[in-house]
Figure (cartoon, helix red, strand yellow):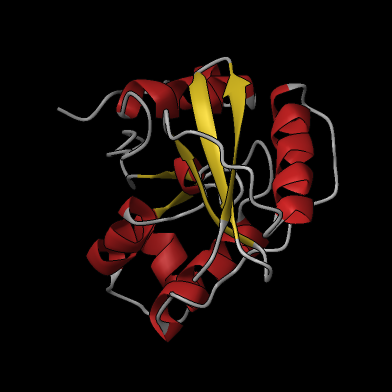
Amino acid sequence: MEVGIGAIDTPLGRMAIVASDEGVVRLEWSEESENESVVGRHHVETARGWVRAFFQKREAPVPVLDRESLTAFQRKVLGTLLEVAPFGEVISYGDLALAAGYENSSRAVGSVMAGNPWALLVPCHRVVRRDGALGNYSGCNGPETKAWLLKHEGRGLELGLRLAR
């Protein structure tokens, strides 16, 4: 698949935006270099605008996601997360599994979160352990980044965020 790659600097580091003609393939913390491709350029620019808006706590058009490489289970779990965890809200891995129709699949949901190709856009940082601990986070600096994002969204103090050990 041919893709275009853009980048944006954030308070947490540089993010790469990889897009096809269908939509954003990946949004992740990365030092990946931009390319000159026109493939997916509109999706890259929409994602840049959305990322800027996220860090400024304002709304912006959401980029189209290229979901072609996902399994049906991944599509269902990530789609459910978008529905049940808006900005400033959190959900446990178990409650997300239940909401997606996969009761008792919290570990599988955790694996989907770990492989989420769209950091911030599909807010896996909003998924926490049932006991209130953060759990893991595969992006940027791990759980410290997850804690920063939740605090940015206004949830850090009321959750009493604890890093999983």
